[in-house]
Length: 210
Image 1 (cartoon, rainbow, N blue to C red):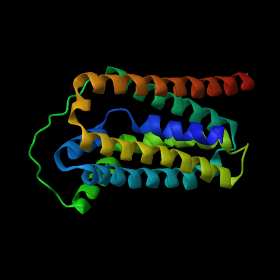
Image 2 (image 1 turned 180 degrees about the vertical axis):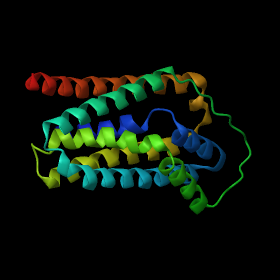
Image 3 (image 1 turned 60 degrees about the vertical axis):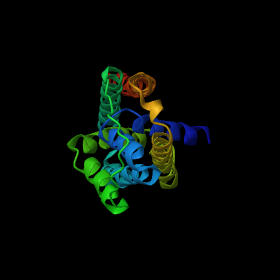
């Protein structure tokens, strides 16, 4: 269970850095309430599940080789470190307004899906992150555990989406520039911590080859 919860935390860390999806969720929550904000996150989550499934069925059979394991650990470390540093350096402000121009929930859902699925970096991001998870578990556990830990990441993403929707719709005061900077710093440091762990695993494998 400790490993399962660690992957939930990984999902939370992956979802938390400020980016287009979180910005859209904050904006929808402040303007139109919980359900619109959650639909943005749900649309993005469906796109992320598509990426995860594609990585699982397209890459899992090639992860047995030492070269692929080293590559995935290294690439995962790079993506996490880059995202963590970007989160630490980012300082974004979200303009809020008292006007509430409601869009349909289905349109909001499509917006979240398209923002995520059309981002070319998302494919590389999930290849590195979920590929690293597969590389870590494929020799230790069976297919059920691979699915279980993938589900844990998705649960972490869902927890963050619901939290973002609830907080953004209930209190716009929490999204001051200072609060956004704090969120970016904490999540950025978490991602860098995962990057160091992934990098250590890649370095360990390289040393075994020498």
